[in-house]
Amino acid sequence: MAYLSLKNINKIYPNGYHAVHNFNLDIEKGEFIVFVGPSGCGKSTTLRMIAGLEDISNGEFLINGKRANEMGPREREIAMVFQSYALYPQMTVYDNIAFGLTLQGVDEDIIEERVKKVAGILGLTDYLDRLPRALSGGQRQRVAIGRAIIRKVGVFLMDEPLSNLDAKQRVTMRYEIAQIHHETGATTIYVTHDQTEAMTLADRIVVMKDGYVQQIGTPYQLYYQPENVFVAGFIGEPPMNFIRGTVKNGAITFGDNVLELGKKLPSIAEYEGKEIVFGFRPEHIQLGQQDQAYTIRAKVELTEMLGDNTNIYVTADHDQAILKVDSHDTPETDIDIVFSIPFENVYLFDGKTEHVI
Ligand code: ADP
Image (cartoon, rainbow, N blue to C red; front, side):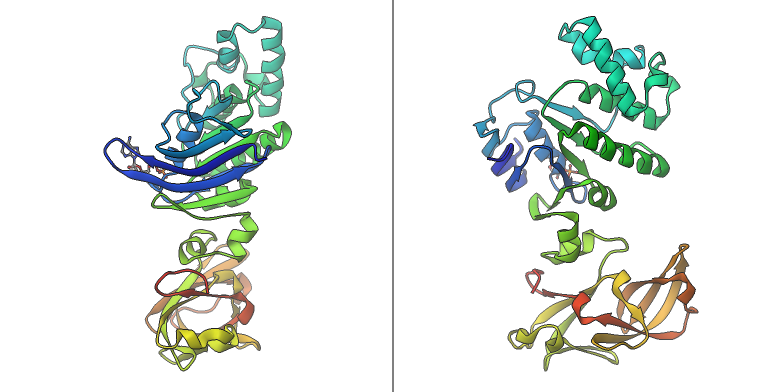
């Protein structure tokens, strides 16, 4: 039996807006689940329904097999870390972390022991006497996390906890959140619009768009086996390149390029005359002509040298693409190049449904 179970969950707001459609997910104890998708896709709404802060319009939410739809937030034994840290400015770090336990009337000795333990995990031991205003953004976020993990609850919910931090702090905190999860083993559901955060933290990712789940899988599955154009384009940085075309005589033709799709897809016959999306990742190309690969001619518009690799922006007829190569192989701009995509690195999608073929 799954620890948490969302069965056909829907959210229709009082104004009639249908924000979440038939959300289904089973979560095992200790899993780190990330909800990812563009702003407005229903991530926070789903998280808030799990927390008990928002009613579930339709469907069932189970904790340990028990219906939890009607349980209050406390009864669910779930702690939430919000985007804004919401620390008490006049209280020390110690008192901020201890606050929940103090309210519950927990014994002082036990509180002290737990605050010290949590502070140790979060690297806050030397800051316990400080006020929040004397801390960096990253440290404040750690206090907010400390306040959640000091309560021995079964589930942590985090809603974009890193969004107020600068780029460098985000990377550090991301690592720390992974460490905290490793140490506490707590079931965690984490909301973000950032695919890198999702890929680096998650055991499993739920990709959402417009209130619908697009795909659920491990980072590896989402990267190598995307089920549709949206997931393929959302996971990976720079994103997957797409060329749209119509299949003619088993090939997509654009400009001087003829991509014989039959080599990748024996059943291409049924797509004759239909629209198809040809996808490939920037990092899967090789410069020059290769065997067992599609070859595309393109013009170099711009190069971005990023250290060990270079992003090459090219146009191939009217289509644009980004290619990622070893920076030693950076070409000149404005020249024509040829690059190859090994057959096994090509993704084909139905032009209409955008579902993988
Ligand atoms: P995300 O977390 O993915 O950015 P949200 O879950 O916050 O998205 O919102 C999903 C959709 O529901 C958005 O279009 C948002 O405008 C809408 N929404 C959120 N809260 C309410 C509300 N209280 N009433 C009506 N619509 C809402």
